[in-house]
Length: 138
Length: 197
Image (cartoon, rainbow over all chains, first blue to last red; front, side, top):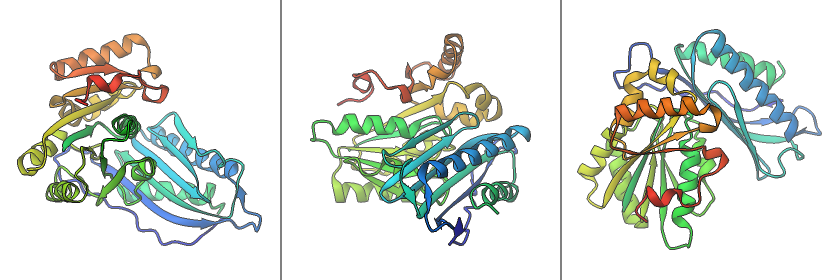
């Protein structure tokens, strides 16, 4: 997949007096992606990649003793949609009827990762390392 | 208009429950329902999940409503009243917001508001972990709730559900409480007991 975006991750500064060290790190972005292959990629194949991404992010959090606030994403293509959401273990998945079977050339991605116990830069690096490897195949 | 604030930690199931409530409120076609979202993160996701089902979804800018965006919330409610005259506004703040502060602002400045209720959702499976690590937030989201939904009860055993229920009752003994699994479906008349329809 090739990317056509510029990352502008969200820096969420919360003004509450959180219990010390418990303000969440937030990394959130949206962009449009195109398949490298001229034939595109199936919705099912794309779903499996994002499920793997979510699994690896959950594993990263568990391995580093972090609390996952919420990891969620929506992918949109051709009027169809994939929605994944997790709070650290199970991954809930919802698709519109035609998602799995459709062939996708371009899709819009919206993703938000919220984790406690980590700095935002570290979270961003952890997400992008896995995203670039699993989704972009770099 | 009647305002319902849906509170609860990240990922507890607020959006799924809001969908269910909104569907119930618009059944029959006579009520106008607006859902107002305040979500952490630039990539708005919850509004897309909710959109296109017969009610209007509006989004407040990224940032936490209970501290920096209270003025914007009150103005948003006034604008909604002028533009839509809704019967209900369902407001979903971020999962790290304190609902009582929001309710206070709405009651104080929202002249068009007939009532404000706080519905708090708890994740039965994660309650222990969240209560231990983020005690002030977990309890702050419960203390002033009018209705508490202990969600994801299908993911833990009965004893654990009872334990969570007992702990929550100690924090807020006056709110009505319900043990549910939003993903598995709610009883047909579930919202009748919670909302004055």
